[in-house]
Image 1 (cartoon, rainbow, N blue to C red):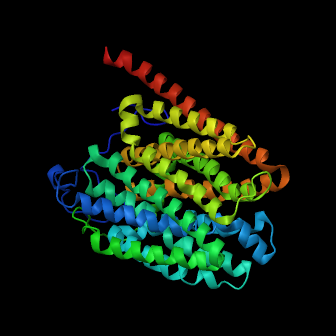
Image 2 (cartoon, rainbow, N blue to C red; image 1 turned 90 degrees about the horizontal axis):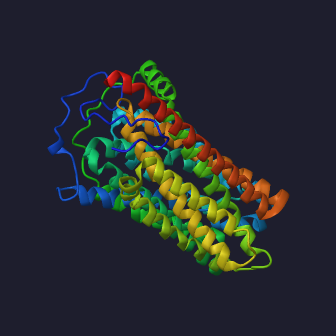
Image 3 (cartoon, rainbow, N blue to C red; image 1 turned 60 degrees about the horizontal axis):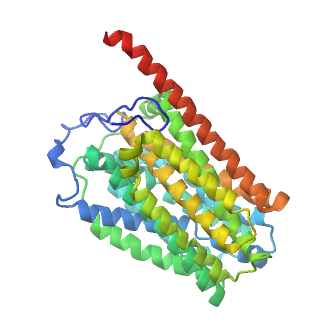
Length: 436
């Protein structure tokens, strides 16, 4: 197996290792033949179910992002204030993902994912009726907190139910569902808002999420390899401290946060840029711009093949280079250049995210739910920070300032990966005398 994303040696997941230290007792772990993989019964149902969950989660989580100019006009607020309707949701998710992932150790991954989607969908039906920007931000924060039970539980579910060699591909499909959800939600809200207003657009996203949640409930296979246990706060704190003390995991968390800072900044602000001169695009066309998310679906699903061909560090370098090229292209005041820039940014982001998140699942030998939860916390914190800072930068210095913020985050990814490469080389040199 190639080195992990950041350059340190990969710690391969031991199939016999428990998924979390908060469990007080575990039954014997399943054999490899009991796990799901392509061609085995249940794998296709599992893939479709988690794909639907990803669609619902991202459609809801970013439902206001394409509507920010309309929300600003409706409530008479600035871009920075309106951006909190996105940042509050992603920030609440970042704060709640760890405690809810711990609850999944007691009540089950499947149960936690179902409960999260149910609550988020119910709140989603209230969001269109928010009487003020304050109420809208508050409801979005509750929605984000509810969705926090989905991502880490999904990663832990996959780590337990899917054979290790098929794990990257399975996570890639879940991430692909995220990209489809982000794309379809934004396109849907764009056109519905142009015809009937932004409140109707949010209601439409809520109905889409209802359909996906129902599909998830009936398709997701029961967990075969999970044994519930009692919660142990001290063990949970110890697991978190252990993960945060692992330099490789910390680098992966930072990479996820920085990639998402770029993505959050770009897609929070792009609507404001395209509605202004020299583009002056209508809301429906702006929503359709998010068709470029299809590129993210392809690049995330292809992450496994990229790693096999280039290694994890090579795949990361490719993702960084692609994102950087997209940021620079987007500076031009020509619509074709902006669109191509968005395509490259999206492809680079989703590839980098899929590689980093799958590496977390492979690196953690114990406490996988907590390891994934910490990654998701960092990831969505990056989204919240990126969205808010991107809007502030745009207000202060236009699109050029937003791109500068993105380039600074990309530089951070490069620095971390180069440092990891140096660590890996030092480890290999240290092992040579011992081997002799």
